[in-house]
Image (cartoon, rainbow, N blue to C red; front, side, top):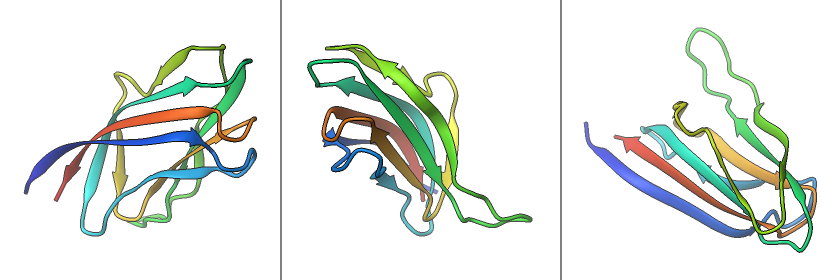
Length: 116
């Protein structure tokens, strides 16, 4: 098994407020460990952000879509680090999505390790 550290970035998320935008989709035959997520407010006023895990993987039960963070306030010109110190394991086809109460005002940086 190969372990590969990666970074996934997206500027000006989401395209439309209220519609979460995909930041990362776990490739097939891969398990990933989320190491950290940074969200930066690039707007001229405070915004709130949501982080969503979309999962339909099934072991002994079927996973569901859940929020990892909801309505997190991010002040003007600030960044917030989410999931730091808490690892989140995601499986093939799982998706991490970001939403914001204002379209195009969050820059996102996701650090992870893919296990193939």
